[in-house]
Structure formats: C-alpha cells, structure tokens
Length: 321
Image 1 (spheres, helix red, strand yellow):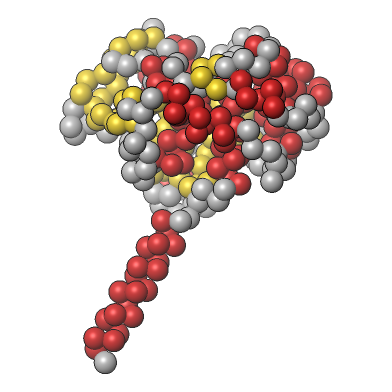
Image 2: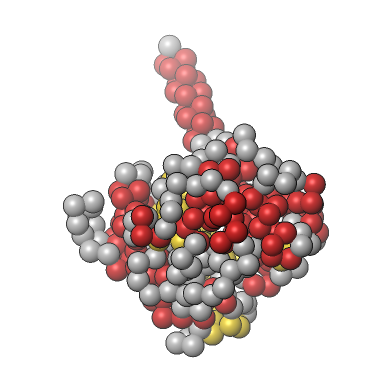
C-alpha cells in the first residue's frame, strides 16, 4: 500500500511538472515601435507564439515619445485579434524620431487608442500587472530604449503594491531579455538614445538580464516573405513603407524568440550564452566583462543566421488566429 501511494505521488509530481513546463510564458513587452521596422516584426513574432500557446501577453508598453507609436501598436494588436491588450506609454523623458510607418498604420487600420494621452503610464501599468502575478513568473522583453524599465524601478510603494519598483521587480520578474548594447563593447541605439535611463536600469535591475546585442540580429535577415502576406496585413504594410518589403535586420525578434523559447534553457542549438557584467558609460557606450558569477548574460551566435531567420520569418508570416 505504501509503495502504491509513493508511485501515485511520483506520478502526480511528474504530471504537475509537465503541466508547469507547458504553461505559456507570461510576458511584458516594451517597444519603441517608431524608427526601425523590426519592432513590428517582433510584435508579429510574439503574437504567433501566443497563438501557439507558448506565451501570454500581460501588458505592452511604448518607451519612445512618438505621438502615433501607441496607435500603431494598438492597430497591430487589433488586426491580430487582441485589441484589448493593455498598453502603457512613457510619461517621462524619452527618445523621439521620425517614423516611416506609424502615422500610416494608425490611419489605415482600425484601433481604439486615439492618442498617447489615452494610455496610462507604462511604469504604473507594469506595477499593476506584476502585483497580480506569481512570484518569479514574468519575463520582461524590451526592444527599445530603457526608459520604462528605469521608471518602473523608481516607482514608490502605493495602493497597487506595498513594494517599491525594485522590490516588485525582484519578486515578480524571472528575467529581463533586452535587445540592446553591442558586445563585447560598443554604442548601440537602444542604449545611447536614452543613455541615462540605460545606465540606471542596467545597474539597478535586481534579476538576471539577458542581452541580445547588435551583433546577433544584424546578420539575421527577415521580412522579404511578407510580399506573400495579404495586403490587409499591417505587418506587410509597415515593411512596405519602411523598405519596400525587402529582407531586413532582425534585432528585436531575437529578443522575443529567446524570451519565450530560450529563457528556461531552450534554443541551445541556436545560441550559446556567456555570463558576466554589462556596464554602461554616461554617453551610452557599453562594456562587457566576463564573470562566472555575474547576473548578466549575452547571446553568442551558434546556429547559422539564415536558419534563425527561417524560424523567425515563419512566425512573422502567421495571420490572425
């Protein structure tokens, strides 16, 4: 009888473990979605992973100061059948540049949010979402400047949570996957376009940070197959406006893919990782020091970029479920 109970207990534990392993990754997604078009590609990649049951989106945020960025993001979500995903915006300082696609996507495709003024602060939205999640269960994915990460860390305890921002991140976020920096040393746009935020966020972030650096995505070309997508697709339209639907660098998509499939040890055939410490100068220049006890990791190329591109582009081509 005791042996039977033990066997039943072991089977139950195995079942619970398998179920947990199959749980979709809870994601907060932060983007500048303004200058480069790979932000649009990363949204398409993330939504495809949601449709496959691999991820769930808790919230999104826009870190740039583009007046139509939030409308563009909301239009993409609406086309993908997810119009009600909460979107926050950067209410503080941030980066602004012209966009080749934001205004047109906002004008040509349906969406609910009519301006950034209608959206809440991303930092406060993230607080609200994190407070309701299990400890150590959320993956933060950022594919833009680190403005909202910095502001989240600086938030005080409030009616949402008795924990301040840094304490809340430490308790709720499993890891942060950041498309940013250039390794082993360099000056990359997502870092230096708001260098003060990057310096603070990277230094003060209390959980592991995995960087997909400039050198990873620059060789991975995707987007050309979008010529085969329906003309009703805002993803296709964004690439058409940006570069005539030609293959383009895939910096942001790599962070999304790793954040969902690699964070628990997957994608070992695609990338190696190296542990160490990333530091950032006041001008946005980053430095890497290999350190086996460091809390930062960087992706290192392993699989041929063309093979990685094939995986990403397949996800980018998926239409609304």
